[in-house]
Each structure stands twice: as C-alpha cells, then as structure tokens.
View (cartoon, one colour):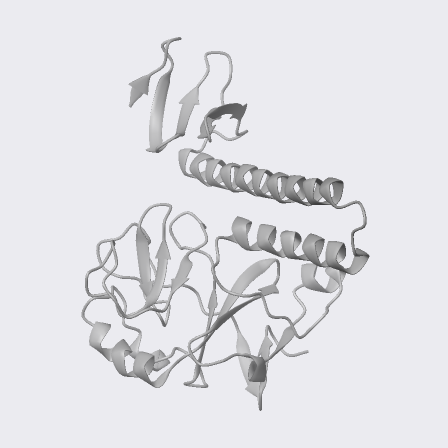
Length: 264
C-alpha cells in the first residue's frame, strides 16, 4: 500500500492500476495510468473484490477505445492521402477494425466463429445456441456467446488428449468422472470462458512449450490478471488464485452441431 501526494492510501493491483478511498465517499475509487494518461473515477462499490473486477473491466474498455481511435485515425489519414478510395476496401477496413476491437476487449487470441443468430431477447432468456463444429480445426478454439457469457469451444488434438492425464497430480480437482475432455464428445471441450477468481478472461495458449508462468506448460488457459492457470480441459492448477475449475455449461452434440444450453 502506498500514498499519493494528497496522502490517500492506494491499494496496488498491478503497474498503473490501484484502488483508493476518498474521505467523503463510501466507495472504492479506481486509478489507472494508461499510456501516460491518468484516469480516476468512483467504482460505485464498497466491496474490494468487486472493485478489482470493475477496475480491470474499465481498463479493458479504455484500451479498446484507444485501439479503435488509432485504427480509425489511420483509416482517415489513408482517405486524406488517397481521395479516390475504393468503398469496398474502406468497408473491409472498418469491419476489420471492429473485429480487432472485439478480440482486444475479450482478451482472446483466437477467431470468433459463429453459426447461429439468436435474437437479443432469446439470449437474455437463456435460449440454447448452436455451433457448427465442422468449421473448427484440431487445436483451434472458438468463442461463442450464451446467456451473455463467452463459451470456449476447443477442438482437442490427439496430443492434447494424451497429455491431459499427465496433469492429474498438478490440478486441484482432476474430476476424473467427467472424462479426459470433460465432455460427452472426447474431441471437444466446452467451457465458460470466465476465470473463477475474479471473472476475468483467461487467454488460450495451446502451445506445448515452456512459458514464463510454467516451464512445463502442456497447453491450456492463463489469466494474466492474477496468474491463474488451467489445463486444456479447464482444470485449475494447484497454488493459483482461482479456487475451482472453469465451469462446463450444459451442452449436447448432434453430429457436427454443438448445442449450448438446455434443449427446449
């Protein structure tokens, strides 16, 4: 804990991120240093863990806004330098920038694949969604939305399935009764993409190679917010902040179609 020039006590979270209290406010306030720019605001909560969550969400939004502004600025400069711009190319650039922004805020380094289009009202009510698994190559992961929650769909490789049992002693809860992939279809793992520590977004790292957070990494998910790590079946490692495995949502398989949610 440190003090700023006004004597306010700051609770350090990460570099450029902290929480503090103001004399006349019952809520936690957030402090962010993003690219040398200072931001402060009330997070409207008295709960420290909830304040940390809001702080990370706020930073993600600021980074997204900066990324989109930079992309749009580059696009406008391109238009000024080249007055005769192909409209199709401009539309493509705008679509690309929007997609990049979506990936940035979610913190995923994988493509968003979709094979369904439920209405917003249906999503809010928790209607099931369908995904075409034939589009997903071995080793790849798709992120779909169900009940406004990101769902990770991983196409497991034979090597990944071979390695998963080797991690039984390194994870907190091996859940052997659920099967190696924690799914009724061993080729695919379906998980809620929300860290069980503070609801951050873990990143997909399928590579089998030493990592800064694990020299014996066999692929899985790493949450950069607080260092939680999970294997490719979403099982949480021992000694990390996250207390439980990534949750498996209700799902079924019909041929090459994955159905997430309860059948109606």
